[in-house]
Length: 508
Ligand code: 9MR
Ligand code: 9MR
Ligand code: ZN
Image (cartoon, rainbow, N blue to C red; front, top):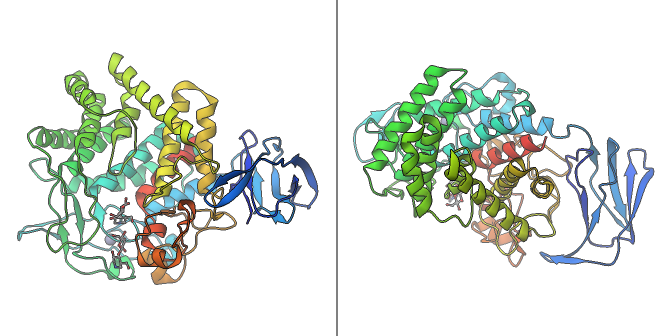
């Protein structure tokens, strides 16, 4: 395709831009479902070079009438798309259902179809380096693998809670309901805390298994050592969740807040314990070089959940952290501290607000022709970065009401759903050209692609053999291959879906 559009469509009010390349003509025609031209726009001579293409950027926001359309110019055309009041409802349900499919230790409902399976990973887990065993069943499988890791879990749940806070009306239940699904993860996280408040970094088998269904992985489970990044993220997420569940279930909220305080007490008494895989464990590391951001986020959430006694510590932590960006994890959690910190009283709240807006402003200044802010390099899971930035921009819009932030947030969504150099809708099962072959064990095992999963997307580092074979010399935006062997470009993850859930919800 040489005319890129959001394949899931647009609301009537949205700004709409199409990107043209190839043998495009001097006009762009908008055709309706009957093939009639309903709008003709000049293309002009201006071209923007990006990622090996010369792009013409055409604004077709004049199209506001609900319907199904295709864009045509010269020899080129777009995938069909709709203009509708609620174009993303099924997508949002699908993205939340994905988390239900990731459930571990649960018998999945028959409605999960080919992806239903009996409860998996139910055996006790051995604490690495000891004979102690613990019951830590539950939670979600992280990604295309079956590990369960605290750091990415905290990010996922935080995004869901923000989505619920920002746009509660956007959610209609599918296989599951948003807050019930988040609770599934929270209950597991509580089991991962040690009596002294510290939190085990992860539970997994020693190595990644083959391309089998979850209940077929029967090797021994290990709890990897505790870390201060996991403990900080845990404290933050639990304190945050305690506020969100306070009204519906005060006892659950109390249990989470008590766990958060215990985690904080451990952190306050310990220096950094940064995670590296211990000997013999080869699953995902989620290692980090710094736990200051996790500690800051934790103390911000504790202050919001239990008040003023934490404010001096917030002040101290805010003073010593760099506020030159507001990333939303999984490694750097400063953005959650900033976004949540706007609710703090007085000066502290104001400084967090200024931080969010500064970070959003910087993003605006870097937006390229495809609407995203990264041009030279795209990292593993770049689609998460895009969705994260969409979240931050939409928060800036919520804080100020300024349209330019909203338009930029929408661009992040359009990119993920089709306005990108390879014309993919990066969510499986949605759009005219979805990603179809993810690095996702159940999909490979069943020979069918599970729907509702956001692909990691282009990774310019070519970090697996399949990417190295197919993508040599490609520009960053094209370093993606829809092949299940390419885990560095086409895996799926709970914490890649979650910022997209938040973004779609606020833009719905
Ligand atoms: O399947 C694994 C995936 O979930 C991880 O993200 C990825 C990177 O850690 O590793 C995948 O496992 C691969 C392993 O690292 C190397 N041998 C091939 C495995 C995939 O088939
Ligand atoms: O998302 C992680 C990415 O930022 C890292 O570069 C990559 C390699 O360490 O690991 C990614 O996380 C994987 C995790 O280690 C195991 N489960 C699948 C995750 C996504 O590929
Ligand atoms: Zn499992």
